[in-house]
Amino acid sequence: MKHNATTEHIQEVVDAIKDMGYEARPIPGGQRTAVGLLGNDGRVDSARLEGLEGVLEVIPVTHPYKQVSREWREENTVVELANGTRIGTSDVVVMAGPCAVESAAQIMDIAHQVRDLGATVMRGGAFKPRTSPYSFQGLGMKGLELLARAREATGLAIVTEALDPEGAKAVAEYADIVQIGARNMQNYALLRRAGRLGKPVLLKRGMAATIDELLLAAEYVLAEGNEQVILCERGVRGFDTHTRNLLDLTAIPVVKALSHLPIIADPSHGTGVRSKVTPMARAAVAAGADGIIVEVHPDPTKALSDGAQSLYPEQFAELMEQIRPIARAIGREVTAPLGVLTHG
Ligand code: PEP
Ligand code: MN
Image (cartoon, rainbow, N blue to C red):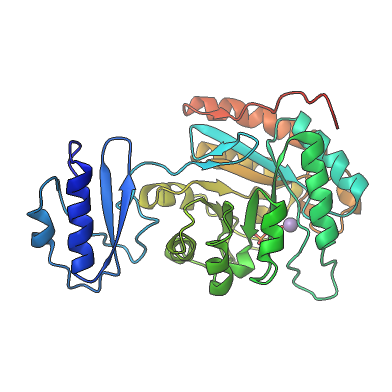
């Protein structure tokens, strides 16, 4: 709509779209409002809309995904968390923590350490998607409770994974961000459920998924009314055996151009090798990632999952020091550390 279009003008466009048999979704922006047309089967007569008062232009969204596209919303989406962390601004957000919650002592210890080193979000799986059914599957509900206690003690926001639509509600009650893992990127029932949880979603790229498939998976969440989605590049299957996956950092600028959603990188699962995590974290920040998610364990040699790719706390401290000047070089800042708490 033109910047001076009135609410009546916008309503007329909405009515016209409904009259044509489609769904209309007004998208207010800083400069102007856009009105999205959903359900276009290719027969939309744009002339009818162009002729209405207040209409600036009719932009066909050429991609198979609509609501996640930059054409749909020009401005970056910012995901806001209860502890003040904002993802999708000029700040680079750091999420850190163990692969899995293992015990009260482990999670509380690492929570304090990553918070003191500058992370504002803690990761930690309570429900773990393991390749083998005989591997540690996570502490489940107990793990969620331990995460909530660690949040209370540190002020960190919590990101943790939901494995299935049935369990998603319980995870959302504890988590600040509900993670959908790589193995579940195309679990459409889970994606739809995540769209109705009322919590931000971290959607990881499937290990054999194209960027368009990632964006279409995110479209499922937005289509259910949840726009608070963070995408995550975590590496795709490659043919080399020196790393666990091939971290596709090109996906970051590609997604930035195609979508308004924030995108972060996971150099831990992206490489699978501790010594490669910090170099790829630096590269991800340089490539324009809105954040990184990193596995850190108080003692990686004792980790119940992903020990080989988990950083020692001292290594995480170094990583933090190294990404700060890189963020600054491209006009960004690593999110300021959380303030000192007097309790907990
Ligand atoms: C994880 O974050 O612990 C995880 C299982 O990641 P991914 O889904 O990317 O493999
Ligand atoms: Mn892991």
